[in-house]
Length: 290
Ligand SMILES: [Ca+2]
Ligand SMILES: [Ca+2]
Image: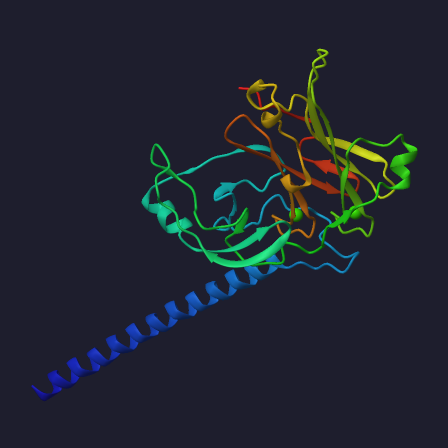
């Protein structure tokens, strides 16, 4: 009887021992996985920039699938090109995904952490994230490695080219190669008159290199009358305020996110300029006609 009891006791001890071993092994595996994930995340968000040393191979996306970027509270793709920006469906998965703290950017500045609110129906079971700024990222990293400068005086190089009407210029080293790029917005704004002259409204965004040699037309708006209504208050112009310079894919190269004027809805063009080449779409023709 006593022997049988002892036998049971030792059996129970053995079982407990094995269970403890299994738990220890599981905990060990989880710690390992956590560490691996952390190392991976750190690599993803590392900006190794010192003026020359930056990622030479552009990454299409941050590799982790859970990270994302919002534009005006709507999720966007980080891949260069033109894209429609639209609301997200309200469901359990999205409620969990989008109700988080965001890292916010506006006018090329980091403006801090803000809690986003998702789930209020706009129409057809769709919603945007409220309370966030123009660009909001789900992870924290140095998304503005270099600053933009406004050029106030018309540069001599442009004067020599005959000049452009009503120009605003930004100067920034987009790809971090030590050479500056120039982003130029021009505008033609002419009123009509009683003698039958048509009013005019057109504008464009162009990319120039350090020496003001034109690299590309980025966006043009040839008929800047909203709804094709030729009235003063219906005039729409592209402006430098429509551009955010931000590194949205963590490769050390700053993308331009250009808001494209439309009749309705939201459309953006993401342009990346690296090693003398443009990724994304050039010569985009915007339209504010219905
Ligand atoms: Ca550059
Ligand atoms: Ca980038």
